[in-house]
Length: 117
Length: 114
Image (cartoon, rainbow over all chains, first blue to last red; front, side):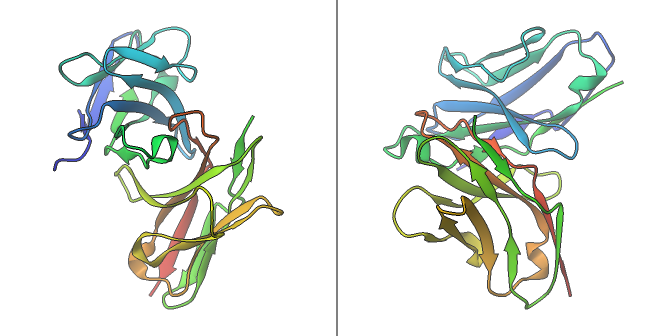
């Protein structure tokens, strides 16, 4: 059973370009989270999605950032007009809809390391 | 707002010795507490969690953690450290919002020397 798959592993963008980060959750998981890890910091919650629905996006910057989890295909985190401060590791995690609810451990992907030059 | 503090940036321990990685938390309501480990260039891996019940929680790879409500702490422990335990450890809290909106500490780097 494949784990959470993120691609690309590394992404380099010039200032002003767009970055698209992809995440395929574990098989059978319909809950997807995006977290961001800035250098020397812990992970910060960005957004929580279920299929075709954004449930909580309180951690997303107000501008330039968007996320989706379509009925078919991976979840996408999109950053428009990137700036140097967007350089970070972006982690996707998924969980199942089992009875544990908020207690279900998250399964993390290996992350996408975005570098903005 | 909930928060998690990991007061030590790094913990050094010799192989075979016991280790402790400290974590304190601040939440309103009952805390759901987690420990995750991160190896270089990898995602986080779940170690253990406290939801309710026994204050001593046992997890993966021989790790355990003790929930102390009066001290609002959830320290990670292992009786005998291995060199392979060297990694970055994160404490996190969730306050049962219905999903895993975790607040993470800043992480503690554990270095186990041979």
